[in-house]
View 1 (cartoon, rainbow, N blue to C red):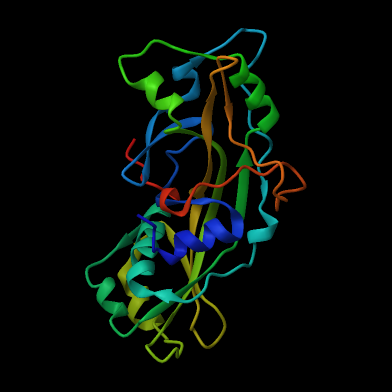
View 2 (view 1 turned 120 degrees about the horizontal axis):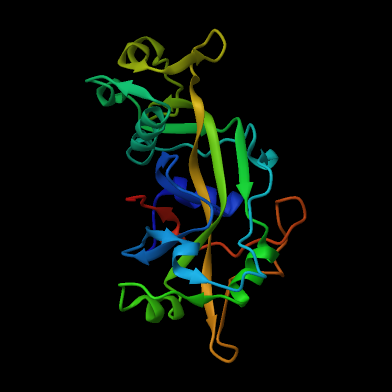
Length: 263
């Protein structure tokens, strides 16, 4: 089943990242996820599943940096049915409170467009992770299918987190005309969140939280080399990267490009 969500497709195509269904701070670098029913579900942290020689340390994250290629970018205009729930999830992640009638305020909207700002990138050094996995062995767990499923390529490790503390959006009617929704939406969002409208037209609304939340990740598939009895992650060395000239991780297929975080 191919994912038809245009937001998922946009971020995968433009930035090679997978969207998080509900932005949050509960996803960590080196978390392990299992592919199931087209989503990725968290199963634990890499150090809970793999063990290795003390001579090969678990890699630590690089210093968080601005994700320049996404700064001031925008999505295409997408149908409201795909865009309204993500807006609600972002507002709630920013500690905003949605009041009754929020979705009804968009009754005249047919399309929405998102604008990205204050986007940060946090990642694991890939070569260090490759070295760790090349000497790693699976730990004994209560899951009888763990070894079989990992060797079948059903497990992924999070190697990049994409975070933001703000989101701007515009809404349009069925003819593509920009709607002024400030008066109807502003009273319906409260809580520990900042709001502002863009210029005097008030056709672009922005919400900013007091802290950053993760809305995108790069999951790398864990692969098993039967000949060497070793593990590694899937890297595409032939594909040029958008990220500072460093090796790009081969992105997931579209139908896999959404993380359903359920703890």
